[in-house]
Image (cartoon, rainbow, N blue to C red; front, side):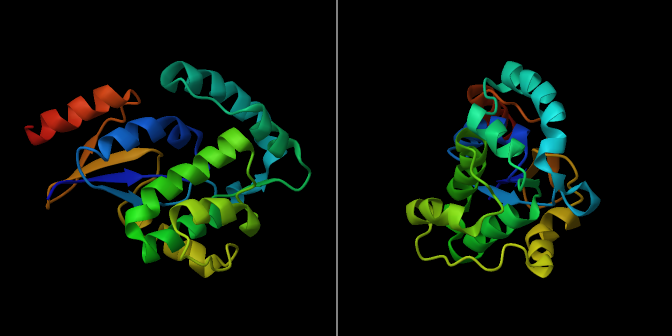
Amino acid sequence: MTTLIYGYDPICGWCFGAAPAIRAAAGVMPVRLVMAGLVTGPRVAPAAAMEGYVRGAAERLRAVTGRAPSPAFYAWMRHPDAVAASGPPAVAVDAVRRVRPGAVLPFAHAVTEAHYVDGMDPNDPDAYAPLLDRHAPDVTLPDLHDPAAQDAAFAEGRARGIRAFPTLLLDRGGDPEPIPMLYDPDALVAELKRRIGV
């Protein structure tokens, strides 16, 4: 069966922009979400230090995808304790993937949208409770800040060499074929159907 491999990061603005198109793609074929870590190691930093960059990128994000960070997101960025890090939310997403694989894509989208729309702090374990209640109520999160758990969450994406987000790979059972990320849902669906001959 053909699968769309989706290289995703929970705090990636372009993954926030891609969510409607990926939801549409999931109606065409199974989507396998993998992570590799956008903001890890020396890139982890106070969120406030990145606000200028994010605001500049947000205009292009809005132009391309029709989506952009909310005032609540920027309010989170300016909080003195806010840290930009992919590890903690990736551990949460990976925990759902391991226990409820069928719920991981909706949960991952919910995490990214809660962050960019509601200003959710992705480093706060308690912030995930309403998202888990909605998508995976039987999942108990491990320590989000455990380096080993973060490495495990990123293992498959790193093994596949994913370094940019979002990345799409069409897997027909051989070497996965890179395909362009089309942010318009209808355009992405049409491209996937064209490639699989539907």
